[in-house]
Image (cartoon, rainbow, N blue to C red; front, top):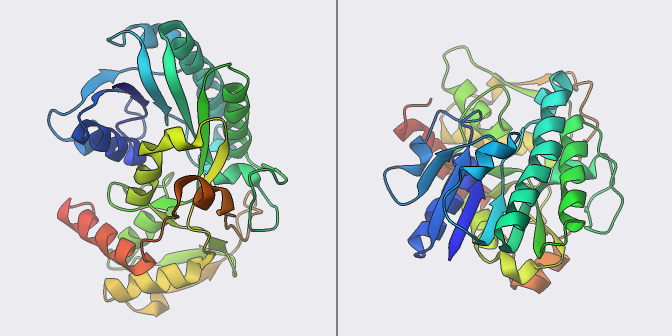
Length: 305
């Protein structure tokens, strides 16, 4: 099978690309390397790498090969906070870039177009979030990721939309625009570092990266549908912070409460995973502590904390 993975040098994309290559598929990764340190997460060999920006249609014309059996579209301008600061970047990448990838897939031929949606697109609605329930995206990132879904559905391509919930695990690096968990781990490895919780009572549906990749590999099961990819478990962000503190032998006094961020209206987040269970026959279930332990070990081994 010939597979294209956009954003394949990033956190989730790189693990997906390597898993596809391990199954014996020909994998081409297209990435502009804006969201990572380079090609390091892909290691040596295994996949073909093309430095390409999805915002530039001509870049996609340089991709090798002919028709794609499958296109995984993971490339995106990521992070709600960054989107508030740079909304145009999200518009050109998550909407314009998605339109370019769709046009490329249609021109080359594509067996299945798999779009990585975001749980952020639900916005401030009551959990559990259902695929056919209300959508109230509150940030440019959330709105543009939902707009990308709509482009895919109208494309005429065979497709699967998979909404990912708070993915974490080895491969995710600390960065101001990245996810909470690696930044928490990084903070507690600094002599004077603290974890700041932005408001009390926040919850999320944290989903281990290898579970997410397992679903993505089996994406044809979800063809023609929109499916949440999550555990269905609502986990307190404070509990996650306290677990990390215990794993790295840090005092819980280094976890402090700050003001809620003005742009973040979503206090609680958890998925309804009924469709996921019915479609795939299982739901992600890696225990939180096991996943956090693996994440800490990877960050330490890579010298990132």
